[in-house]
Picture 1 (cartoon, rainbow, N blue to C red):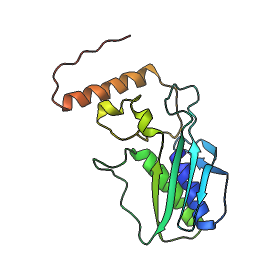
Picture 2 (cartoon, rainbow, N blue to C red):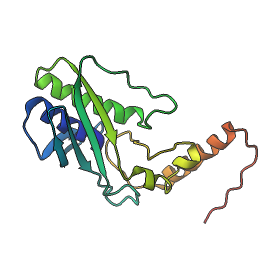
Picture 3 (cartoon, rainbow, N blue to C red):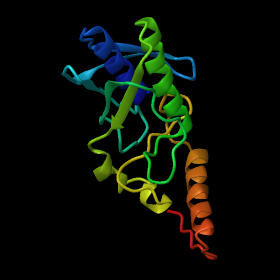
Picture 4 (tube, helix red, strand yellow):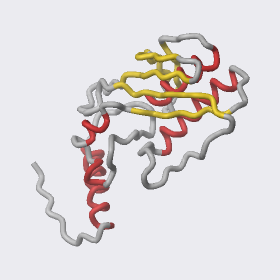
Length: 183
């Protein structure tokens, strides 16, 4: 949601020339969010801004970080949504949210050209070592994940699913034995 909101705000500011400090975003779960826009940089070539992540009661290492979107006009639309090895680790739902938010602004402003969006999380590289990313082969920063647009507290089921993903990764790398120690 933070990446999509930042992208939406940046596209709006780029196309209108008007600075905004709050953006409205509907999540896939149907929850309407009003998110504050921070760290705004506006030039003739691009707009860059951020939305601060709030994780609520979830013990998420990314709570409080700024998620940035930098947008600029391009002559033609860029590549599609799927990522290959070496590309940013932004999963399908967040990518769809980002594109939908940007397209909404372009339609409202009757802009038919292309928009390039770059999502960045400056603290992501340092925080990644405290996540499952290194064990999953994801390097250089954190992943942008999500299915509902809302952070939900980590449940026992979610923890088991995270361990399952890690075990599956080890299996695909050819490892035959794993030692699991709870506690």
